[in-house]
Image (cartoon, rainbow, N blue to C red; front, side, top):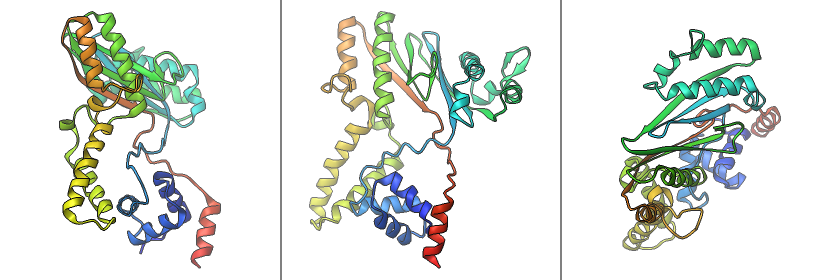
Length: 307
């Protein structure tokens, strides 16, 4: 049996909003497995939506670079937010982002020359010695179109084209580029706010869909209703899940009325040209990195409680 520490209970509470005793019971029921405990709480109707963005576990910046038909996002991490505000660090991030426009992928960018014959990796190593804090280039992502625009947006910018969240939106169209950039930026702002799971329903991860359906069914069965009715309930709730999770069917945050699909259709009509959204990328600093938090007092309390 895994040891259920106070820190583990706190982590589950932060991720689900459930009460302390419910979290402790969920962890005990699932041998300390936090993901299984989240599912258990949801099935009991105690924890609601599972749109966990994950806790930011590393500091640094995401930067955007575009040149009309190509756009790139890069993430460069630092140990503290203080260094993320350092002008030398920001200058390095801007240079790396510019090189990302012509790099094939993350590994290729690591070896790309940035300045004075130095690769990205070497350049950052030298910067570590100058600033005195560890930092690293973590990843890059790109979008391109044959005709149209790729536009970027940075939420809560710390400097030009860099901040904690960066978004790219790609629109294929022969329409006016200035208008397309305006539309793409508005959609990018929407993506930054809503963090959709996929562009379309068909693009959703099959495992994510199956897990959501299973969780909704388990939750509905708790109501005691017959399974035939439960299945209809689940179908209805899945439609709501699609509407809230898929970008094209989400309600545009700027007007609260139209879906993103309708917003694009309206703009296409105004432009007199077809407009197709071919992709988007949302990148946040520290996504998916597990940050270890030390809480000595909580660990001592847990140890005393278990003795």
